[in-house]
Image (cartoon, rainbow, N blue to C red; front, side):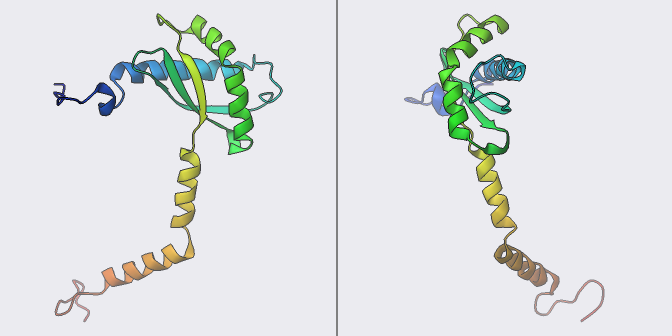
Length: 154
C-alpha cells in the first residue's frame, strides 16, 4: 500500500518511482548495447570500454542522467566530455531501440562510487585500522572481571 504523502512533500522527496527505475534500466541496456557496437566515430572513444552504472530519468521522462565510468577509471573527464559531445547521436540510436513516447535528452556524468569504494577499502586495510581491529579482537577474547571462560580456563 503506498505511503501517504504529507502536505508539501513532493514525489522527488521519496526517490525514483518504479516506472523511473524500469525506464532507467531499459535506457542503460540500450546505451550499453550502442557503446558495445562501437559505432561512434570519436577519437576519444575509440577502443575505450565504458561502464554505464546507472541511468536516472527525470519525473517527466524527458531528461536522463547517465552515470558512467571508463574501464580502469583513466581519462574519465575526456571520455565523459566525448560522450556528451555525441549525446545527440546516442539519443537517436536509442530511439530506434526503446519503446517510449519520447527518447530522453541525455547528460553524462562520472560515477564516483567506484573511487569512493576503493578509498574506503584502502582505509580499512591500513595498518592503523588493522591494529585497532586486533586490539578489539583481544578484548573480546578476555573474560569480564569475575567471569569464567566457558572452556574452564581461568
